[in-house]
Image 1 (spheres, rainbow, N blue to C red):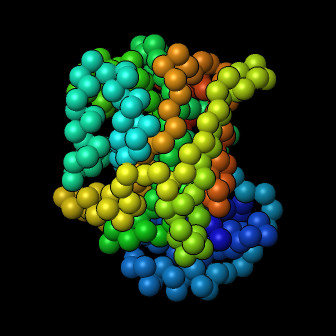
Image 2: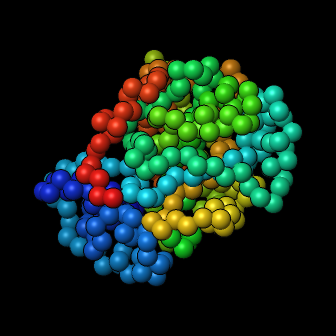
Length: 296
């Protein structure tokens, strides 16, 4: 079962619903995802256990974040990520140190209003020479820091900008079109072992696959529980958070995204995130991203 945000076909308002395995969409007693994530895990379980009516007719799907729910990300949580960072960087030792350190690398990735979802564009910076997708499993947590579900994140990144200087990380990671989330959140209670999920990714250009790779969350150097604990250690997230947990798949240094590329990320038991690449910020203006009435 999945949590899914959508525009109500009757009222045009953003809602959170429960999507079952037969793809039927049911209403829930709370209005939108922040209202759900503000509650305890037990309260959330009770709400999900009593779904409402089936939503009839086609709906417009929305990204699985809104309001004050932020997207954060972790870095260097797989050995491959450490190797890639060292390969691209002029300051190599910082990545070796953080891989083995007790404290993980955590950084802000995106406010809710800038997040893209399935079949929407992702962006590469006009001032970056080397750009890559970073396929990741993201954990969705409530206000208490408890894992409620899992989704897919594309932590699109500029390797050339971060490689110049680690202090440029925000510019390499936080920009228009740099964050996409699969529209569905797979409920944590329906996944046997989130630390054993197959992850695959590909880049298709002009109808041909130019890069593909796979990994598993079993190869993570850290656990989801550990990362969430650090994420909530120094701040409040009253409407929950999405924490993308790092990538174990990084293209070789000679692979870079180009306009028109299609990136597909699949995670076993969760689904598939598919996006097309555009260059520059103009495709992601506030007007373009105004998919829903802002309630907060």
